[in-house]
Each structure stands twice: as structure tokens, then as C-alpha cells.
Image (cartoon, rainbow, N blue to C red; front, side, top):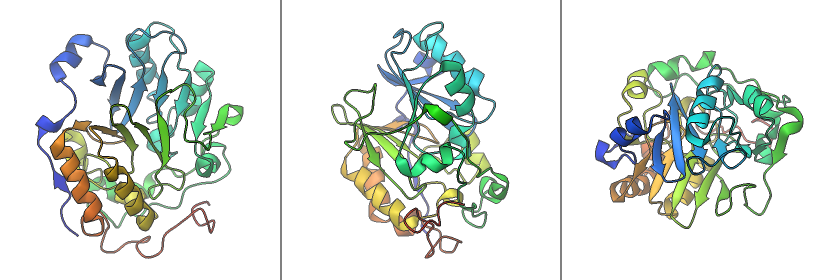
Length: 297
């Protein structure tokens, strides 16, 4: 396996000085898009600052115990008491749904996801076991302790419409990008070529605790220890690279923009098997998929 693809920090899509002056605890990467890093994962806010109640959308819901931090940034960005119109889930892994049940109840908000992700969000099925043998870093070695059990957002769960539209997000479409999870989606805005990739690919070496802490940017395949279907992951990255995005924000790592980002994404897509796929592992050559039920426990 080749090394993942390093990038310079000048490819980052935010200005730390402007973020500090704004004091809403987020990185703003477009006038209506910001994200907050919560330890090892990002949550994303879509909507103009000051938009007010039900005029913005949250993408993903971070780690358990971070609901207060997510709500704090929302109030600072959109106004006191400003609830989202919806929460959209890229997928249901523990680091993306940790605060979901609390936020959905507090805000009384619908939660949208792909139908293949529904069992992980309605309490009926767990993910396949992680593979701590791949990736080589502390985060990977600890992955056997990461939760795989589902959350249950009950009657608030909604299935995304089959036409690719996203309720309350005009101009955006969802794209099915499986591999890291069977119902994984990415969000795409064609007008300005903005991509919210989820974990279809990421921009830090998530297997390494040091890399997670320093956030040195690199183009990286999905987190190895939680990816049970490498052929589908390859197809998803190839599809996203073909979009030629101008700006990407992922579930892990800094948001990136510009031609060097696109070059790195193209390289990842062309050489995915050498760059991203571990040489050995539980799911290498033996994927867990929705079609045969092996993705659900």
C-alpha cells in the first residue's frame, strides 16, 4: 500500500483569523457553510449566519456528549433558539450519531438518511465489527472498543427522496456513496461545486491519534478500520472525483479547496487500491454488504 497523499496547509478552505473574529466556534468555508470540529469528527452547518429558526440544516451529529457544543455553535451562528429545519446523516457510525437522539428530541426535528442506513438509526441492526488490524495507528488499534450498536430516533427518522433532492436544502442533491457504510451518502451542490463527502474519503489519517490531533491535511481513503466494502468504496471515490469539486469538507480532517485538492482526489481515485486499501484485513476480499445482509448484525 502506498502512502496517502499529503497536501499543504494553504489548501485549507478557511481563514483561522476570520473564524476567531467571528466567535461562533466554527470554520466558515462558504457564506452559508461552516463546520465545527468536535474532537475526532466534524459536524456541518448549512445556512446563512443569522438565518433564524428552521432556516438552516445540520449535517451529522458528532460524538456522544457534544450536543451542547453543537447547539452552542448553532445559536452563535443562526440566533438564540434557532433550530434546524432538518438533520441530514451521511451515515450512522458512532462518531456521527453520538448526539443525534438528544438533538433530535431537543429540537423536535426530522432526521434524513438513506434507506440502507435506516436499520442503524431505528435501533434494529448493528454495523459489522471494526477491523483493528488495519491502518497501523492508535485509533485503529482501539477500534475494537468503538460502538457499533444502533441509535433510535424513532418517528423522527425520514428516508431521503429517491430523486436525489434533500428537503429544506434547495440546490443540493444527495449521492449514494457506499463502501464505508452501506447507506453512506455525500451531499453535492452543483452551482458552486461544493462537496460534503462524509467519510467516503477524508482529509486526515484517521487511524493515527497524532494525525487526528494535528490535522495535517492529506487526501485519504475512508477510515480503514470501519470500512467493510472496499470495492464499493473505490467506486464512490471515483464518482466523487469525476465531479471535480472546488471545495470539499469531510467527516474527518480540514476542509480543502483548489486545484491541488482536486489533483490529490484524482490520484486517490486512480490509485485507490494501492493508496487506500489495506494489503490484508477482515474485509479485504470479503466485503460486508447490504445485498446479502452481511452489513447488518
